[in-house]
Image 1 (tube, rainbow, N blue to C red):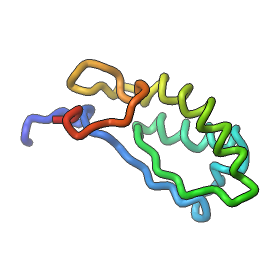
Image 2: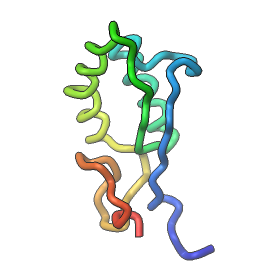
Image 3: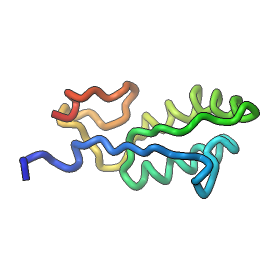
Length: 98
């Protein structure tokens, strides 16, 4: 109604592992599966609760490998007004969506 493209909006997910079908911190494959499914649905920003102490290694692997790889792919059909695909290596700023 205000002339803003819905595809220019950031879509965030706050994921609570204890309520999820799959704990994203259970393994690197589980992390990529959980985040990948939501990315396929158009989400492009994720907040996941912290892993348990014994899962810290999975979080470290996700931070060093999976997240950069998933960020490079980005959510499908989501483009910022600047023309750059969403999720291309930096935290989004509010002005990216104005």
